[in-house]
Image (tube, rainbow, N blue to C red; front, top):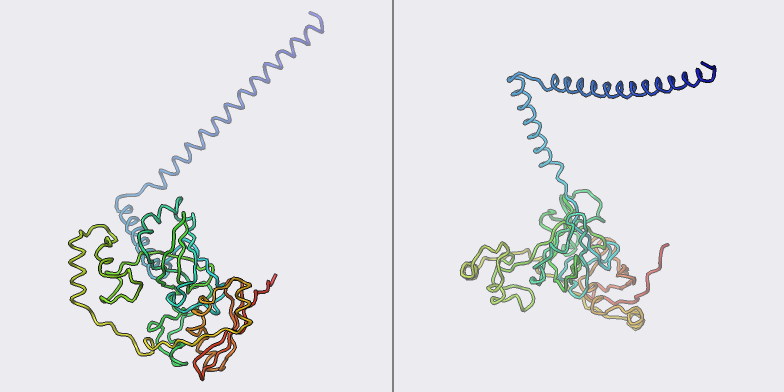
Amino acid sequence: MSVLTEMESLKEQLKVARKEIKNLRKQITTLNYTQKKEIESVRQVLSDFKCQNCRNLAENAQNNAIQEDLETTTSQDIKFSPIGTIKTPFPEKRGVPRQASISTQIEGVIDLTFDTFNNPEHSLEGLEDFSHIWVIYYFHKNPCHAKAKVAPPRLEGNRIGVFSSRSPHRPCPLGLSLVEVTKIEGSRIFFRGIDMVDGSPVFDIKPYVPQYDTPSKEISHPEYFDLEFINAREAPDGQETTCDSLASTSQAVSNKPMVRVPNWVSNANTLSVSFSDKAIEQMTELNVKSESVRQLIASDPRSAYLRTKHKSQIFSFQFSEATITAKFDDAHNSVTVVQVRKTQSTL
């Protein structure tokens, strides 16, 4: 055999040997993996193994831990995620109407998010049949500190318990407003009656139902909230019959409860509002409705602190893209809007 032939034979044998070594390595890798899985399985069995008594003790401990977690969550860690945000013309707290009923001509929008529902517009089906809704939202611009006593503006600096007022400075800073629905488009609710700051997170929306939400027959709302409206409105849960609804309504009317409020609440002070020639000209240029401004100013947006402590007569606040400046005359119970200028950008 020639040297060349012998070299070719050795190369062929080397090639076969390399192939066999490669196969052996694959088998070793597979055996390694199988062994690790079996060892892990044995460890898991040993870890889970308990006698019946040990199992009972472990189960009791787990149940106790769950109960403690529930109690802790109930008392301390209750968390809610907003379902949407409110868009209003008020970027800051200053000048925001104290109640939604004060600003019936000013419009806002509730824009639902897609975080709670994949199709948030589905959650609003049927709401167009209601004229008014309750909105529960968060006072996100308020410092988070509780006040046991507050000074409502109508009490001229005197203080009462926070739960006897509608102050936004509350232990749980939640707002509740009754607003009028103007239209619903997709996942957005357009409404009138603003007492919220722009960007306020919304936690819940509930329809206003007179026979449940009004404590007496006299409903101090628009004319369509009459007895015929109450009788025609279906109960929210859809379980009551027409007869049941009529019966409950008639009973509520016959057993009309007495509704009481303090004098400082019922004796609301409405100011006489006038506009300077300059303000009228500026409102026309900026397309600002005078009736909207009148509603905001007539109820005196100044805080009790500004009015009683500082005797402040000049008051300015931002409304949409305009800054409104008014001069108050406390001696004559009047106020004059002296200027309505376009808000300067701070950027």
